[in-house]
Image (cartoon, rainbow, N blue to C red):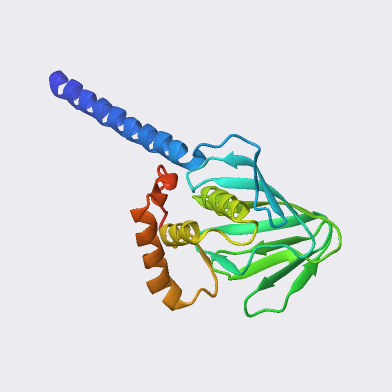
Length: 219
């Protein structure tokens, strides 16, 4: 009887050790994939009047939270876009922000006021004042948002602060379409032009600049 009990206890200990090992492996792998290659604060600039500072990445089992600050020049701001997996919130520190969710009237907010965009809401915001707009906020779950924005801003700045290069835009939109998408891109462009641009870019090796890019997260 004693031998049977000891055997059962040993078996349970083995299962527990295996369970803890699996949990640690998942946690470590998640941390490795989520924090990517960045040190904080991590600042990006698109050369078109937008600067984002990723203050810190808070790792958690839900995909992480990004604490952010942004500085936007008068009239500047991102185009209509949608985050399929993230909620985003901005609190005005200085200036005046204009915000619009498709289907609703634009709203305007000053210092101390907060605007929040929920996942799935097609939205945009811009500096609606005459001074630099400064906001603090967060995005969660972070997933690959920091990587996506970093590469979009890098390409936009290198392309004269207008839009990302054709290949970079096509690659990032195609790879991370489950997480974020620009609104209003014609179906013909997505289904025909983007694949052609990617094919030509791959022939010339442009895809190598994205080696090590994290895999997209799906719902």
